[in-house]
Image 1: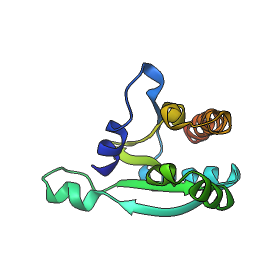
Image 2: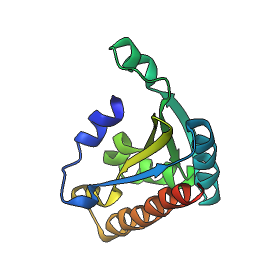
Image 3: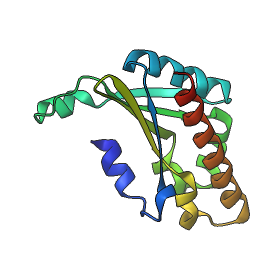
Image 4: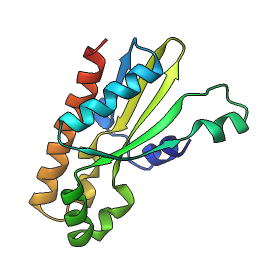
Length: 144
């Protein structure tokens, strides 16, 4: 639910505002692969937040729904100090949830944060993240 709300805060601008990948693997296997891929790309998982408890309490039938927050620790510290207006968006989340026998991964395209780019450095950073995060989801998808 939090991910849906968070993703809804970023204006939809075409088909690339969200990155999605579907894995034919079960949720636990896909979660493991996701964390391995995040690490392989030089990022650190900062926390995994269970969302399913609130969803099941609201009547939804799911037991496998997580937000995986990740960042490069040095980059996160630097950005938080130099650009405090980015703090609400960091670390970056990927939503992962079971859908029948498959697992779906969704994240916002960081390029959609361009309105927050106060200089070329941030614009380039958001573009780099966009390419990296898309590649990570594609890598998870291909591990089927």
